[in-house]
Image (tube, helix red, strand yellow):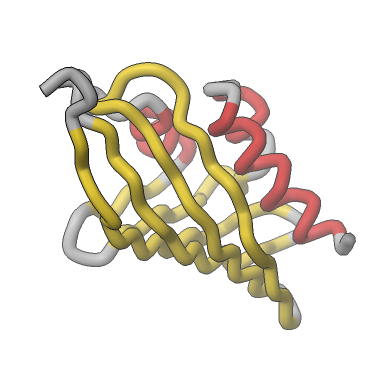
Length: 122
């Protein structure tokens, strides 16, 4: 596995354990995180606030299906489940495009598609 892919894997592992420092260590200081139509964050402080989004509770479960790399771009495709504070469960697939600099994430563009939202207590 390349150094850039290892960084992306470490980043995902950090989310799976809600380890802020592990995630932040994968980022450049001037990191940009974009989810088109939803948000645009710049810098580690803004990124850090989004790690534990106030709409969710607990730790997400993220599984990567594949990673593809060319030059300093890594694309990760996978699946995420997480719990909303109201008890609903988000079940979604994602495609994240990581632009790398010196084996760190300098820009992340996230595309997320909900498969379903369920409420197991309803």
